[in-house]
Length: 151
Image (cartoon, rainbow, N blue to C red; front, side):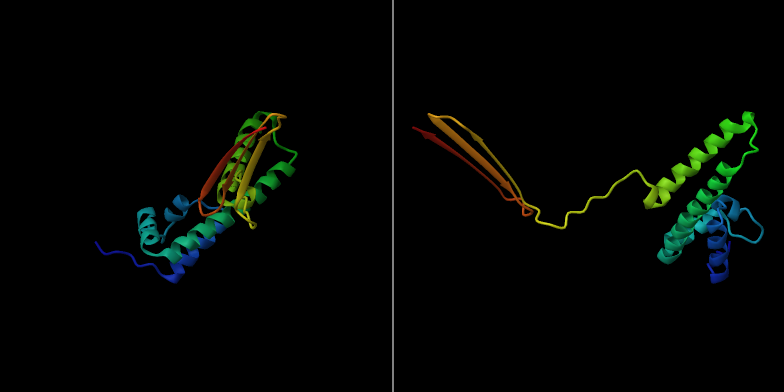
C-alpha cells in the first residue's frame, strides 16, 4: 500500500478546519482528506506539522469559546434544553482550560530573585539560650548550627 505524502495544501486544509472548531476526526472523514491514522503518523514524523496541529487546536478552543458566548447570549433556548446546553458549555470551558494556558487552572510562579532561604529561631531565656539557624540556597548546601549558652 502506497503511503500518502504530507503536502502544504493538505496541511493547510487540516489546520484551517481545526481553527474553525471542527474536530480532527470529522476532518479526516471528509472527502479527499487523509485518514486519522495517516495524520497521526505525520505528526510522529514531522515536528513542525505537530506544532501546527497544536496551534490549530488552540485556535479551535478560542473559536468554541466564541460560540459559547453566542449560546449564552441567546434567549430562545427552551427550558427542556438547558441541561444539554449547560453540559456543552462545561465541555467547551474544560477544553479551553486545557488548550489555552490563559484559561487554565494551573498558576505558574516564577522566582526572579535570590533563591536562598534562611530560617532562624531563638528561645529567649534568662538562664539559657538556644539559637539554631538553617540556610538553604540554590546549590542545595545546608548548614545548621546550634549554640547552647548557659549563664
